[in-house]
Image 1: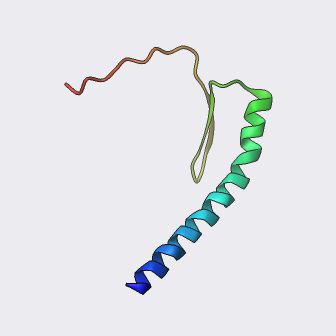
Image 2: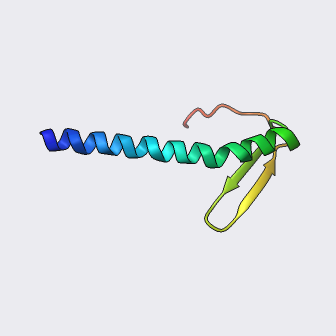
Length: 66
């Protein structure tokens, strides 16, 4: 039982470290969007491509699950 707690604590610590790394990498991109674009801009990043996307107009429609 103690090993499970240690493993969970280690996983939590690793997740916190990964979130901190992600935040430090993403902050300059967020700053760039805020400086050069508008709230309708998104950046999608994959292992081999970066997309900058802009929404023009849209209307959400509720989904009823039918």
